[in-house]
Length: 537
Image 1 (cartoon, rainbow, N blue to C red):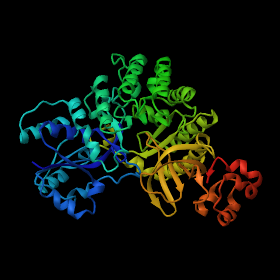
Image 2: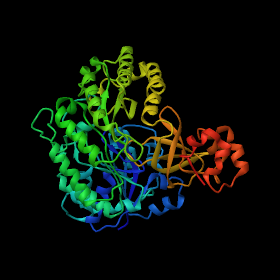
Image 3: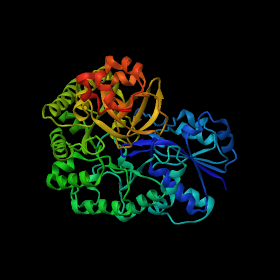
Image 4: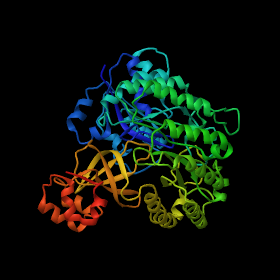
C-alpha cells in the first residue's frame, strides 16, 4: 500500500515544525505506519508546490496524511506553511486525512467542504484518533507514542534540509496552569514522558544523523520531572542534571542542544532550585540558548483579566536570575543562555496605557543592564473553546494603531540596543548555515532555538557552513562578513564592509593577489591591526 505524509508545517505555543525544524508529529505518524509494516513517503509542502509531476504521482497513492497548522503566526525563512486555501489544490491521493492544529480553525462548513473533496478531518490533538483510523485500514495494533517516536526517527533522512534538521523533542504535553485566556495548550491531556524514553528517541535520531535538537515540546522546561503535587510544580535540579548527562552519554557529538519555553512563575517561586537548573543548562546545553518567557503583558490589569501566569515583577526576577549565570559568551559567539519575552496584543482589559507599561518594562530591562535575546510581539489569535472566543478581535482591531507604534518603538529603541550589547561589532560568530540568496546578500543562521538572522555580504550556496564577524545591525538582524575573508577573492562590497578597510578597498583590488597579509600593512597603515583578524590570503 502506497502512503505519503505531507508536512505542511506547524507552529504552536509549545511546538515548532517549520524548516529547518521538524516537529514530533511527522515522526510519530511515520513510526505508526512503520509499525503497520508500511514504508511511507515523507515530503514537505515546499517540495510539492509547483511540482506537477509530484502532484500527479500522489494521485496513485492509496493514502495521504497532511499535517498543518500555524497557531502562532510568524515570519519564516526556511519554509512557507500550508494555508487553508491550499488544501483544495495540493494534489490528493485516493484517500486523504488532515491532522494538526489547522483543524482548530476550521468551521463546520469548511470541514464539510473538505470532506466533499475526499479529505477526512481528524480533530486535534490527533494522534490516538489517527491511530484508530489506521487500525481500521491496516488491522489492530498497540498505541505507543514513545515507540512511534523511536521507530519514526528515520523520517528525518527524507527531510529536504537533512542533515541540517533541528529536531523538536517532546518531554511533556499540556499546561499545569491552563488558565491563560487565549492559549490552546489547555486542549492537551497532560502527558509526562519518562526521561529514558526521551533519551532513547534522541539516540534514535542521532543514529540516523541528527545533530541538532531542541527540548521544545513542553510549556515549561524547568518543570520537566518536577513535583506536580504542588500548585506551582517544584523543579527537581538533580533529575534534570541526570537527564542531561544521559543525553550526552548516548550522543557525545551533538552540535546543538537547546530548549524553548520556560515559565517565569516557576523561577520566581523557586529561585534556588531554578538557579541550579540554569547552571545545568549552561553546562550541558550549547551556547546561543533562549528561554522564551510568556509575559504577554506588563499591565497588571490585563494579567488579572486574562488569568496570565506571571506578574511583571516575577518576570523581571526571572530575567535577572537567568542573566546572572547565562549572559557569558560561549564558543560560538553567543551568550550561553538568555531569556526571551513574548507579548500578546488584543487581550481583555488592554488599553492605551497597556502599551506604555509594556515599553516601560522593556526600558527597565535596559536600564538594569539585563540582556534579552528575543522580543516577540504578536497579535492574539482566537481559537474556539478559549475564553477569548467571546471577546473576539474587537480589542485588537480597536488598538491597531497603538500596536504598530509600540512595535516600531520596540524594534528601534530596544531590539537594536540589545543586539549591539549581545553581538558587538567585530564579534566572531561560528557555524552559520547559508539558506537564501537575495541580490548580493546571503541570509544565514546558526541552527539554534531562536537563531539571529545574519545578512552575509556576498553570495554563497545553500548549506555552506562558515564563520563571520559582525559589521552592522538591523532592528533584529545583523550584517556580517565571512571570517577569515580571503582578500584575494573577496568582492569590493565585502572588502568595503570591514572596519579599517573601507576607502582602501579599491587599492587592495588593484594590487592583489597578495602572498601574505603582511603585504597589506603598507596600504592599511595603522588600521592593519584592526583588520588582520578579519582576513587571510
